[in-house]
Image (cartoon, rainbow, N blue to C red; front, side, top):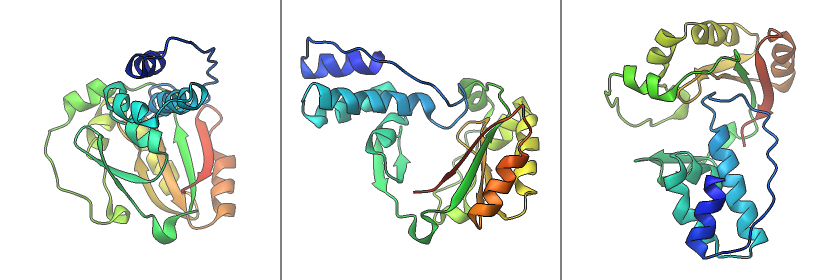
Length: 199
């Protein structure tokens, strides 16, 4: 609703719309679900109201740091508050099978950032050497995240594992789809999972 109202105000639109949200991602899971929802609303209403997409681009940063990237819908590198975006070519990693797993526990982004040491460890030159500076404080708040990531790393075919965002979702990239699917079948029933691909 915040996204819809911001767009209507920015574009001077007085008409409304009926919106229904079908939320299938865990809440507070560190994978940008709320930001993706806001971006979807901006795209949908831009089309429905037949307005300049520039209005959506202008209001997106105020809605959340991840909203501009979700609005673009392409792999990007975000800097600043997430409003400076540079397209990012995944190269041969595009299409890589990925498994996301969340232990179905909410983790406060604010609390994770409060425990972060604030040290900027520099830009990532290669995503395959990537790190998540929020992982250590997130695990300190919720040790189960470490267990999820360790479980993913132990799966046959898993080649790269990390926590996503501020947690608690973790992911693993797999060397083939069959290994990813087999791991997805083994995810404990009490955990949420999504088998998908990098694009």
